[in-house]
Image 1: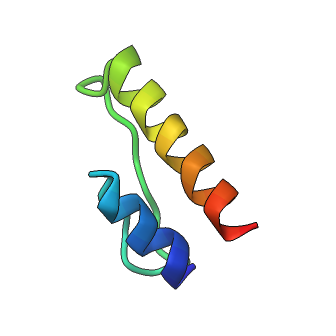
Image 2: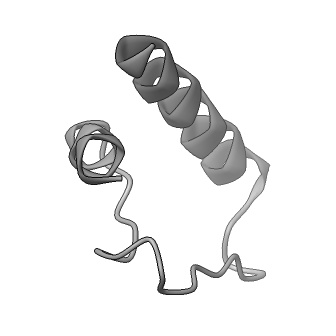
Length: 49
């Protein structure tokens, strides 16, 4: 999780610093925010594999 967490930070996505903490999406997050988060996650997972 540490490597994924720091990779997401590098992409401007701020997650809870522990894999055991909850993360939330709110009405303030639009389609573009969600798409950017998913793209950042894909990029990070690709770098980890």
